[in-house]
Length: 84
Image (tube, rainbow, N blue to C red):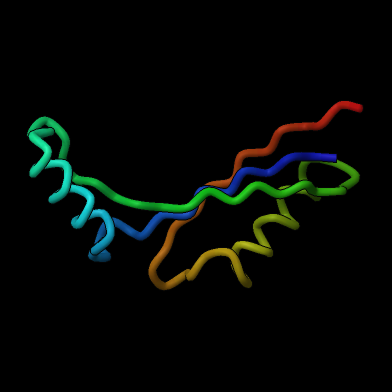
């Protein structure tokens, strides 16, 4: 068994309106040193797979089919083996 953490972010070339709104709010709160805000999402999954390669393949397939929009988003997968 594995725990997968998938991080999905908009590609750098895609405008991030939520990030811009947060950046504007930070600036208005006098956090001038904070900029270039980008917002993403983190998804945690438990994967029942025979080995690390099978787990990574299953999560990658899920990302390609559902969890990330391949036109606008990039994703990374982090796997941790669960011990009983």
